[in-house]
Length: 185
Image (cartoon, rainbow, N blue to C red; front, side, top):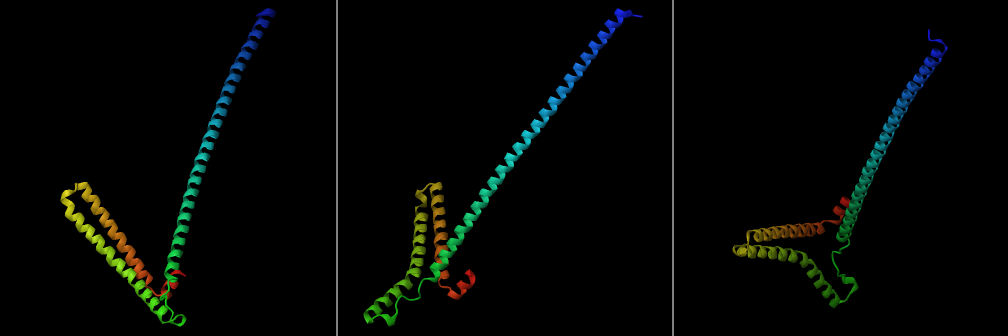
């Protein structure tokens, strides 16, 4: 039908068309491969970013745990210091068997003053904060509302601090050593 020349031309055209189609499909396959690699790369980058975020969170948690452990260690040391200060204080400084009458009288006076310090200090501090409170209250007309509020807040904080300190230390140091040893051991 086409003859020899027609066969050559149609065969060549068919071959050329096949090459073009193969090239187009090859190009499309390469494009799909590139998209696949891009998706894999993006996924790998996302996984690395997640790994970094997880690492940062783990590091932050380790730091928090270390801070908690450090705070606990400080509290344990504070408790040990308090226990030692309560247990090591002698009931009396004077020992009649080791000194003469003058030395014994001096040590008796020392024991008397030592015994007076805490209750006298407690009464003095409470009286002082009360006087401060009434002075602030009396000066209230000369102060701005903000100043008066700040002064009242300071007085309240001071009273709470002093009362807590005096009561806990005063009664805490008067406990029997047996009770303290059973609590701390």
